[in-house]
Length: 463
Image (cartoon, rainbow, N blue to C red; front, top):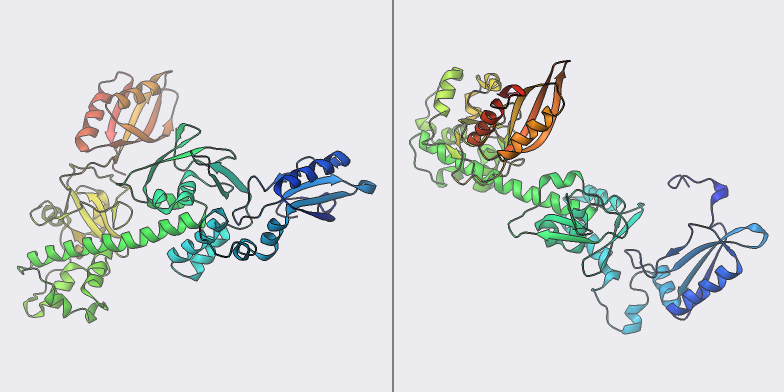
């Protein structure tokens, strides 16, 4: 009553009758007889025979006005449907056909439950995921071949992809709903025909977890993040230690690392790599522990200028190639570094490395912790889009905003965010985030904007 927000007087199933018949045709025949004899309650008819529930519950439900104007619910089903409803998914066909089967829609919900159990990190996460599947209204969507997929209300295209198959969910890159290309976060409606576009090069995105609603999808995404984060931290930690060995004039080898595992509470060398990648231990600290006889005390505090000059030397810089932003690698929101910028990494405990431009004002707060500074360099195969931020002042006249966006589009930039930070009678100050390939691309856009008469000023934002 609370979930559906209805009063006690509005309940239609206080009195209910169940009609058992021999076959599906008799179900609809009985329904016609009942509807011809009594007035039907609008909105109470549900056909769970043509569209079964995920646990394969099948029945016809209808509500009618019976004798003495009483609202009555009537359930019509075959005896086989009744056995399944009363005794469970394996109640009838297992003993009727002699051999159990694990294929077909009647087992979909059970397979998904087992899949959630396999991918959940613990009992609390398993309970969280399974609760997502309960007590929710459903939405029914179709594959291009006409197969019916039942999902909770609010499910998105990513939920649909994982419901069809786990690998389809992991590799989905786009979706067409009713032949229209829409974002992956689009919510499905009853009767939608959904076509998932996949790519072998695609992997689950950490951002998907923000909008998926099914337990299976969330469990798969979280498991990928956990395993991928360890791989990312491991690769980053190994690169940091290799650099630290070179800085100390040592040849990189895992043998001296094995001798200091207990010092850093690690069981294996891989665990040590992960700890360094996470920022729980620094490369310099590990090398000094491995070669204590060669350790010479060094100044704890260095000047910011000296740290920046040291970071410009890329001969022993750690490449950031292959690191997925949002896992072991984060791009700072204060300076929005782009390929082509001189950059430096700051090791953050538990988060990996945050990339800043070399002239970022935020670096002043890390001047007293030089062990957290990491020389990093862009890889040569950077092909992902990065976000550059501009501060633009534009005259407050009709059509000027359209001119601004047109110039950016003609230069190949894609606006990902636009915010008016200050407005007056004559001018608008606007902050724009633009997806670009590198700093050269952003510089080209800035030059084109400055050549536009309606734009008063354009500067790259640093905060």
